Image 1 (cartoon, rainbow, N blue to C red):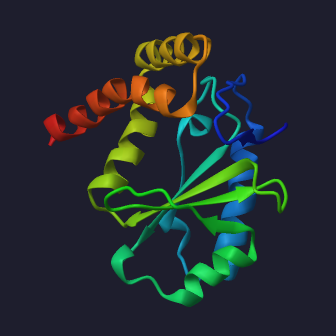
Image 2 (image 1 turned 90 degrees about the vertical axis):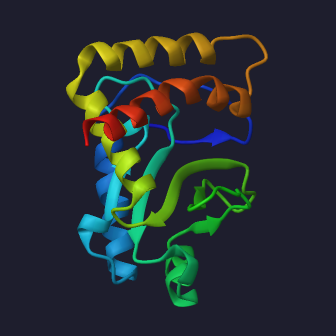
Length: 178
């Protein structure tokens, strides 16, 4: 299994169970260097969805009590296992990445820090679980991703924007099920 994509690269790989093995390996590293409980660390994104073609980057969701008040020791602990904070600005979320080397050109893992068991956490977990249980929806999403990824001159910003209506539609289902 080869992980990693450069900054603006969009490439999908066939699903492999090795993604989950890698997530569990990194999860144990995170637990070892932080005081997090295992329930606060989840595998999300397309690599966490069975049979889903995905960009070869492992997405990890970490739920914290309050991301507005993160202890500097916590961030240094994540840095000690190779995760660096990105300049990504998203409301209610802090993003870190792990790279193949110190050129910082090829990302292999993302950590998404959010408030535990709040809206973003619940949406991301719901999306993963919903697609893992609904084969027809999973197949629809997979086809969309393939079409978008194979489009000429595709970049990561456009690819993400094209997927957004589908993703938000699944988030809305969670809201409607309450």
